[in-house]
Amino acid sequence: GAPDPFRPGAQGLVTRPPAFTAASDPWRELPPTPGARLDGAHAALASLREEERRLSRLGLTGALRRCREQLRYWEFLAALFALQGAPVPHLRASRRSRG
Image (cartoon, rainbow, N blue to C red; front, side, top):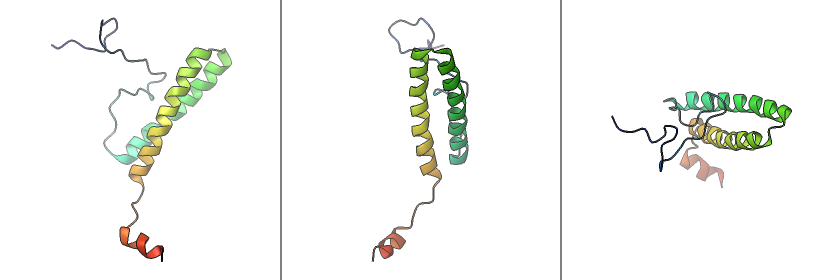
């Protein structure tokens, strides 16, 4: 088969940074529906916030910084997924409301 460019020790290839939690793995497949994607993002955020508290208690500043980077990533995705599930205003109704 084809070589896995993400395997540990592969030279000259991209390496994946490890996920802090299974729920926050950015390489996992996204669910097919907007609601399920939003639920997955919320699960990732909850697990990362718990990990953030743990890392803070342990004083692991480098790991805490990387965890917070993943938190920002998942917060962004959660916002996008929330927009995907939001109702779209009807164009004519919005024109009427402007007067």
